[in-house]
Image 1: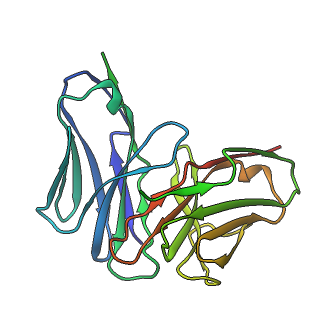
Image 2 (image 1 turned 180 degrees about the vertical axis):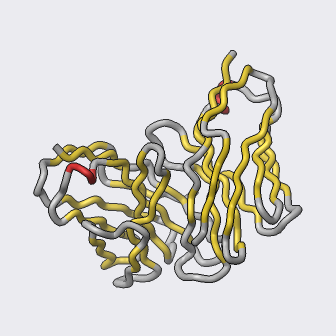
Length: 112
Length: 112
């Protein structure tokens, strides 16, 4: 069974204080690993897809990396508007319908 | 931009009522999904559909059914609502090339 574990559950940073969020996964062959951002009361918003170990993707202050067992979302010099819950999900290579298995998320709060 | 529209943002129903949640997408995507999201449990897949009139059970289908009569519309039905179905319901769609799931804004359902 595919599993995704995210840590920490919650993270409080000062503005400008860089940090990383972790996503550990077990899957029977990885087709893709997805990062989403979710603001309170809204649906998740797509950030990145990573397909193979060693791959990296960047968007503004966010950088996602992937190994064979985990992914990191690095946040450089965060701002208050980066406050959100960050979700990680995996898609197995086999099995039907492009299903994703999600972690429970990391709730990030960036303070002034 | 992908647009996924859920018919209601907030819904209050009574125990035993039949409830319909509607989702419409404008991207001609083949795949559509219904999730529920609860604190500490993350997103859990209820049902998905990879084509018109096709449906597959997800991880927690009990107490729910779905309907997909047209490609752009995917409905979630609670035949007899119960209090343990109080939750945030999220609809998502994806194509067959990039497999990225795009989410609607969600419907917060309260069953009293």
